[in-house]
Image (cartoon, rainbow, N blue to C red; front, top):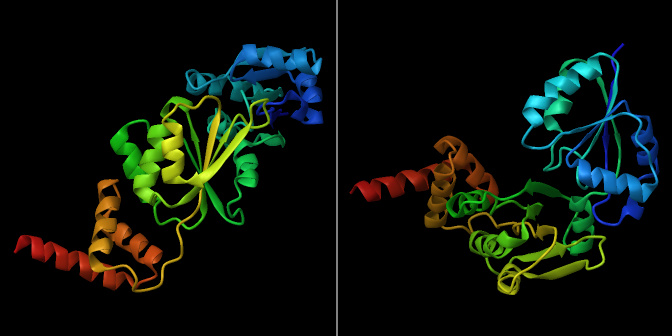
Length: 283
């Protein structure tokens, strides 16, 4: 009989936010796989919990190698509890590989829902939350980061990003360039902790503020692109958007289709603009 994989949410700051079931799962699991065993120890001390099962590390550096071992334990009937440093496993944290391996073997996967920096930041941002998408951490390299952000420039849903504090100023400056300096955003810092701060403003304002240096865990929420009136985007801008997507690795056909969708135009109109620009360049 196979075991069960339990994904458990952990506090993103205040340990009092730990879900009630977390303590019971920590005490009853055969194996606790933790992103950082030292943080796990501090959490169990704060909760007054004693782990009776085996504790193993499961982080980015050993995730690929340790997944088969944990999957085998699940197949043999173990109850494996997966916890990360903060929030829900798999959300920009280890977990996806193990979930995929468990699903492939037909092993039950369940969760102890817990705090989420993504949802908390969205709720506090003051920006629309009816439709949103999570983009994780932007690429570290300047060119790759700008290209990735430009891909999302026409996205109408609210965007959520994680970022390291020492890269925040550069990331906000790149967002201002890709999305426009007037696009509204919120920087959520140290959520649920003593020095929690939510700074709201335009991307241009926030980029200037971040140049002074920012500390703590960071979540950035960015307003989605405004809906465009069909025909409001000129041919040169359509060609530029297609070129940006192609530079990011999209095939021209898919790039044209996406640009047309964003602008509310027929694909043929965007295609004709690209062909005309190509012919003008050749001439």
